[in-house]
Amino acid sequence: MTANTIARDYLKTGSFPGLPDGHFIDGRTTPPSPKKMESFDPGRAEAFAEFSLGETSDMDRAIASAEKAAARWRQVSPGERCTILNNVARLFRENADRLSVIEVIDSGKTLAEAQGDVQSSARLFEFYAGAADKLDGRSVNLGPDHTAFTVREPVGVTGHIIPWNYPTSTFARGVAPALAAGCSVVAKPAETTPFTALIMAELLCEAGVPEGLVNVVTGLGSDIGAQLARDPRIKQLTFTGSVSTGINVAQMAAPNVTRLTLELGGKSPLIAFEDADPEKVADGSYWAIFSNSGQICSAGSRLILHKAIRDDVLAILAERAKSIRPGHGLSSPDMGAINSDLHLSRIKAHVEAAKARGANLLTGGDVTVDADTGKGWFFQPTVIADLGPDDPAVQDEIFGPVLSVQNFETEEEAVRLANGTEFGLVASVYTRDVGRAMRVANAMDCGQVSVNDYWAGGLELPFGGNKKSGYGREKGWEGLDAYTKVKSITISNAS
Ligand code: NAD
Image (cartoon, rainbow, N blue to C red; front, side, top):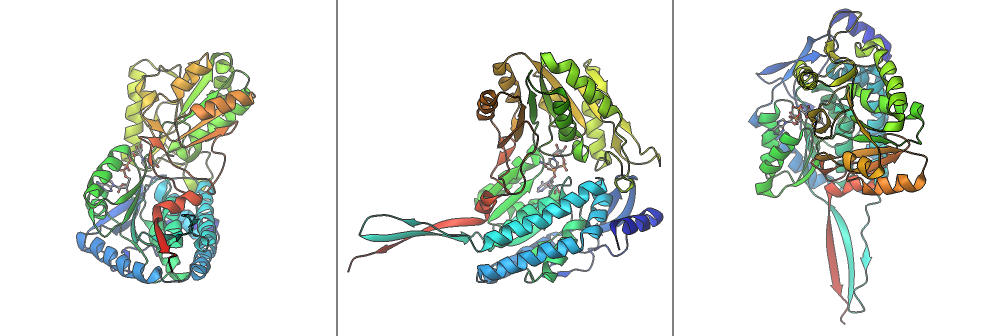
């Protein structure tokens, strides 16, 4: 069945038959837990399925199963790991239509966005399949008396706490390098997006991943998520989500000295100088803030504009933002829904507070619904201009389709404004002056910078933040570092 046929059936019935309602532990789907929670379709604001609320015993079994499987997997040859991970990528592609539609219904994003996420999940498995047999060490020269070299070993059982904005690709970007490195996995998806991780775990087993190597337990973060963070059997914890939960997770993991990768979001700037083309700037900014309804850790949520091009850029951008048609992700809208009513109310509160402070609102500013159905959790594409550096709309991560605009006159001022938040995930600079582009790129306190583009690059490049955006890098070759530990070995050459 194609994505359109699957989507048509769902839109007719409001239900999706065959969704897993247990956990995935030790290579199989468990019977459902006694306690369940409803999963909502954000595009309709209606429940469409239930999933299991995991208990302590479920998480405990999942970790025990991963521990047993890790000991076996590290003995599997790199070549065989490579073959299995390539099989995973193939199966993701074969199941892309079903996975994409489920992702739309669970997360609220558009079908095109979900299809992109599934394809990049497959690519992540291909990329790390290619790395599995290239995890070499180094030979080190200690002089004639010794032979010395390093080896990279798997860290063991890894825990993955997944957010709701990119459920498939965040799962893949942690699980693929973990498996390539020889580790096992226990994953906990977010409460509002439980299904794709369960289905991906089934596909991993079908592709040849041994039983117990990848386990998924669904349920509450404050409950089984915290249990995962505290368990001493977890040797690496990969967390993506809010700063406050990330700090909490780090504190819970600290007594065991568990290794951590934290990806905690941002307030990323797009800086445009006076020599930049206003059309290109408006285009880049539009894409950077309204993709995935702004629910992206690396969204370009701040536009820092030279005063000379301020009016031109904002005229184009506000016009384009006004023309956006939000709607259910399966109805080919320009922009999808907000993931939950709770998150919609957070976005609304941020914007209401800005309005109460007298913000210069160029467009948007309120919740809305799908115009065809009168339903759903949506927020109007919003642009707030002329903000000062300390304004909460500039400082706080709103995580929605809300663009905060600041103005500047000098390069030094642009750099100061861009670095002037507690975050440091990505930045972008638009200018035709190569020297200035490089000076600004070097001055940015963040993990990645694009020049005359936003989000250039892909899974081949490392990704991660500075400051309160977190630490550690995912994707690229560096994405393997979290899942391997280096051992140095020396041999005496004495006769
Ligand atoms: P959150 O950080 O609370 O949730 C992220 C994940 O952490 C979920 O899987 C959740 O179940 C789990 N979790 C929650 N409490 C936990 C705990 N005590 N121990 C272990 N795991 C726990 O995020 P949220 O409440 O869903 O969203 C709040 C804000 O977080 C958003 O407004 C946004 O600013 C930010 N956010 C950022 C990202 C990102 O990509 N960096 C993703 C989602 C949300």
